[in-house]
Image 1: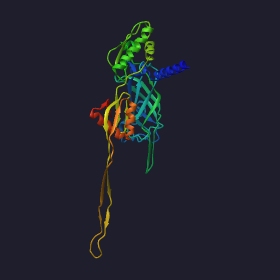
Image 2 (image 1 turned 30 degrees about the vertical axis):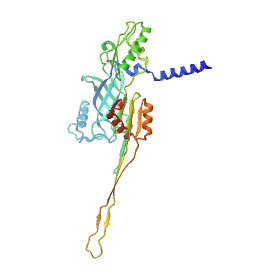
Image 3 (image 1 turned 90 degrees about the vertical axis):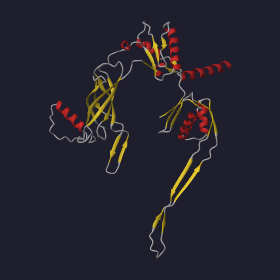
Image 4 (image 1 turned 135 degrees about the horizontal axis):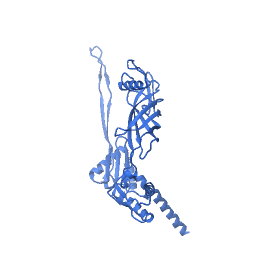
Length: 366
């Protein structure tokens, strides 16, 4: 019976350890393997009267005329007034090692005064990279999640109707030069740089490599980069795949992130507060306007007038001092909750505690 209990406890510990572990591929990227951004200018057709006003968006009219000229239609002397066309900017991310003929998603965003791109079709649009070369061409029906409807006295809008996406809407025409051979020295680059995390990744890789390859293959270059030495007997793809599945428990800095616009407060696991006494009261001032009508006496030749009457009341809540100490995250949150604070109050208190030097963490205010 005792042995079963011990095995049960060990199973819980192993399970909790496994749940807390994170794969290396989730905390680090291969250095030099990245996406490339593409951009292009195009026209969307088939809109139901929700396109650009050509009189206000002259670039739309010029682009429409140029497209029709290339198709053999001369409209230079014609006053175009169509509302079914919209000028758009098309953007996409070109994944690494993608080959010609592959398809990628594109995002379409209106440039002019179009009210909606719903139901529109993007015409053939060349997508260029930062070097000015065309790497893909995009075309297809646009999927818009938002909508906009208006009448003479009311307008209803949900989401953004002037932006949409085309799944697999771009066809890759040119490959980006390079591969693992062009990358040079293989290295992992941490997404959240940290000295301890870099050391943990290095130790996990070397422990596995000592058993798998019989040699150590990783060495930390700095708090962001871990340099790898690939054995000649294994391909780069398999080498990165095997190391990426190794699990570690990444360290995280003591940090509090505060968003004053939304009242969001995110407190990291390692945040600690030295023992401090806190009081947080609210001063409420109420101003009430109660105008009165002054009526003159009979036969006094006076005039009726409105006399202002203003009442000002001030009240300040009595809040006792509370002692807050945070040896861990759970204790800290429990202490703040016992004070019954609102998010805005928590933000103000955290800033004051940081100024007092009792907050042993980095405070990031957005």
